[in-house]
Length: 357
Image 1 (cartoon, rainbow, N blue to C red):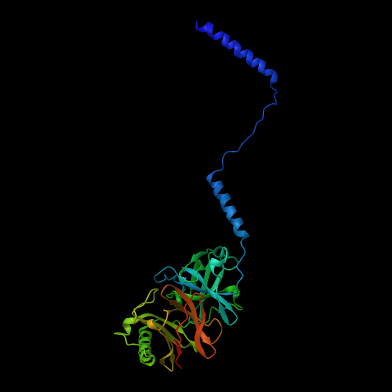
Image 2 (spheres, rainbow, N blue to C red):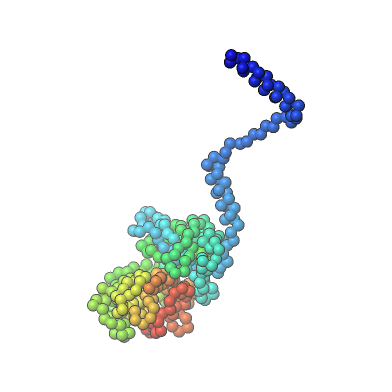
């Protein structure tokens, strides 16, 4: 019974299909060959190539020659190589300001300059770019950039920061901070034979800084702290004009060299004492009390005679209540003053900076 009921249905289907053939036009067969989906390695290569093309489209930032701060990033004493030289050290490269003739001008603000961080290394610190590093008035080595660039917001004016390898003479191997200029920006390549003073912070320098502070405290009307030694926060040795030994020291009462609000009775005394006829005497001071105005407490970073003035310009980091900034202290006319300060920095209070002939 099932067979008899099934046969007519088959015939109907065949006839219907056969009749339908009269209205069908055969256009042939189309064959397409499609490649397999790209592998992860291929996609990564294509992405890298696209990024390269994008980088190639970026234009360098047009600026005057720059002054840089080079800082070691690996702590501890460098290992000796056995041939009188020291091994390479990891370090960073931070642009401080433009060097324009006999002065300085600020860097562009990343917030106002499109792609500043990505563009900054172009034609400035691309891989293998060489910089001459200075310490205590002498070239002491070189920094080789690796071409990297990242945003650094340590100071109120954000900057692009690079990385690389630092090579310095044995006499400067224990130092952590240096000023630097790109070798191509120098009119002449400094001689590697230039004598390096090799001053270190010895007990003599420590005692000289305390003597200078004790001299200046009554002269400037600074409130006496319970202990002068107890408020010394930083001390550095450097070379003043005519290759004189000099010491820079920061004394802070009721606060520290840090961002934040000082105590109402707090103050900062930054001083420079230089050697003259085998005696150290104060030659400069920056005294600022918390009740005199907005906080601006300075600390020494590095020094070099970048403007060829006969006296070094001193790079300072200055701490305020909400941020810190960079500044250069140098000769202008007949007195030392801030010859550069980040635009977002706070000016010293009136009369804070004094020379002591």
